[in-house]
Image (cartoon, rainbow, N blue to C red; front, side, top):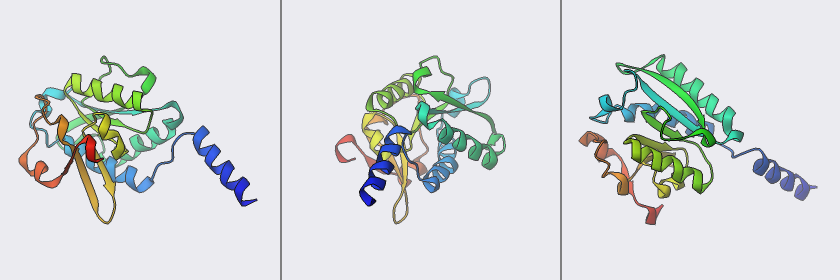
Length: 182
């Protein structure tokens, strides 16, 4: 009986998308928009004088993306500091270089989808955030995990993007990693 329940649980998880830690989602939803503001060139990333925070998701994770959007809107109430913002939800299938975005927040997906999002972020010169730290090896810039304490990770291989320039304070707070030690 226990084996059947375990098999059903694992099968359901595979069929209906990934599982997410609500505490991590809320922490990332609170912190990632603030990190965007530490980019000295944030003005260059505005779209129609607004920050467009784009959440990229697999079709099976639409409800998770919607939950993150609702949490951001409840927390920030229309402004990231002095900048008005808009949260857009974009399925990986619809993501392209034409997608309006000041930053990307990428939920879990296949390696190909993660690479696609990372390449678009790099080409657009915008900051990319990942729910899963393991996705930094595909080119995303930031992730945050909660262990004994909250740790913010920065993929040092992508600091060369010229259109992103962080304040020194942020660079003193993060833990640098590269794809070889993720």
